[in-house]
Image 1 (cartoon, rainbow, N blue to C red):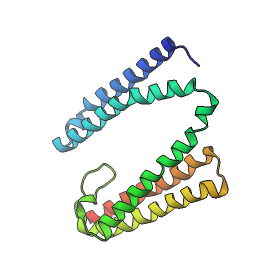
Image 2: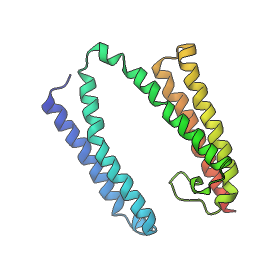
Image 3: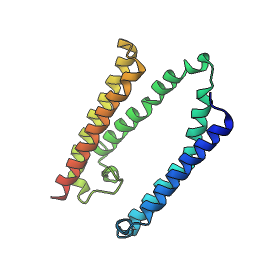
Image 4: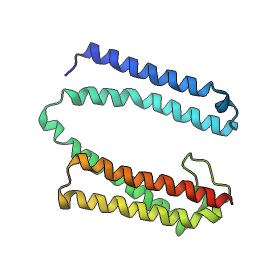
Length: 175
């Protein structure tokens, strides 16, 4: 376990680097040429990242010196935490498909799509399919005793497919 002083120094360097990159990104001409609504959304995202980073760094420090009894609970906590995105995807699919709410028809960046009524159906189906994929992963983890290091690639495939599909739906809704 690193000493508290060395970890604090590392944490400050990481935090300072993140702050510098965000300030640099917000000072570019491309950032300033975006609509004010998009700039405000990006600033909010940057601020939330800066607020939650110290908590993540503190958690990493505490886990680096935790006894094995505590570390055995980490995979269980991660497994239980994976149920939230699955439920969120099912809720979005229900909201878009059954309740026909177009306010959830948004692109990857969070901006509403130009033609949300046209994108509502495909987005509902996509959210349902990816939710079923995450649910299948969650069922297969205890069933097949999948090791923790195999979860991330499977989730990366699901989230990558989701991102690509949302971008394609967004392009089709603009046409």
